[in-house]
Amino acid sequence: MSKTKAIAEKLPWTDRAGRFSPLKATTLILVSLPALWLLYRTVFLGLGARPITEAIHRVGDWTVYLLLITLAVTPARRLFDMPKLIHVRRILGLSAFFYIALHFVFYVIDSKFDVLFIGSEIVLRVYLLIGFAAMIGILLLAVTSTDGWIKRLGAMKWNRLHKAIYVITALGILHYYMQSKVDVSSPVLMTGFFYWLMGYRMMAKRGYKEGLVPLVVLSVSAALLTALTEAAWYGIASGAPADRVLLANLDFSFSIRPAWWVLFTGLGVTAVAELRKRLRIGGSPRGATPAGRTA
Image (cartoon, rainbow, N blue to C red; front, side, top):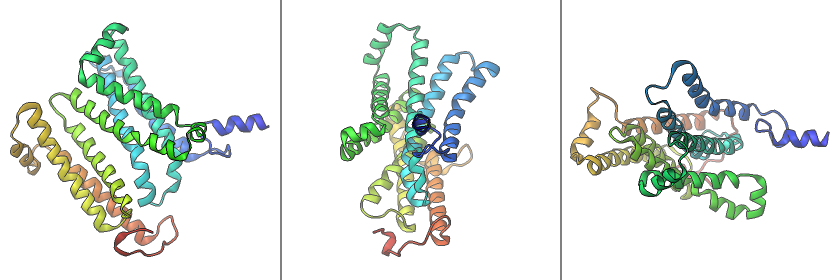
């Protein structure tokens, strides 16, 4: 029985007591869906004229998405009073590693397993070097994600090491920009979400873990930074006038620019957090604190 329990405790869909965890099981299913959809498309629908290249891009995109979702766990726990989300953060981080590893495997296949060519390309092409550095970083975090490594390193050193996810995510987004070439709307959107998530952490360190005004200010600031980043990128990459790129944010006839989606998302999170706080859904009332500050 002890061996069975020990095995059960290590299964990814069980909690520390070896019991089935619906939250973990659901998370595992959700993070598997992009890979399963890619497999389905490959077998039944096809991936276009360059299937390997398409697969490289799709799993690379999902690496960035999962890194951002992993970073979103901390604010979601606090703002929505969902402490159990901490139990799926490791699953999300390991899923990001799985997708970036698959991204690299597809690249190796596309390069016909030519190790010398792959090595030279990584060294000579900056965007590949940045992506490779991000992959090594995620590998390091994946290897040290276990309870055993927490004990070996100690909680403080382990936490410092795993804060490298901030740099890794930034590198992943930069790689995303550089391989997107002409249209960088998706990388810009991911940048905006990254600004919001990092801004929240800076805000929380100063005691503002919730509150209507701080969250609105954060959302507006992240949106403005997103618009400025988009203008700066197009200016550097193609020489496009910054004022024209910024003014494009006011033209809704063609599309809604990423900065607006960042603003809408941030304000949506703010609205839900405020509603939860007022109605106390799913949690007990907390002690009142002034100006949105927490004790």
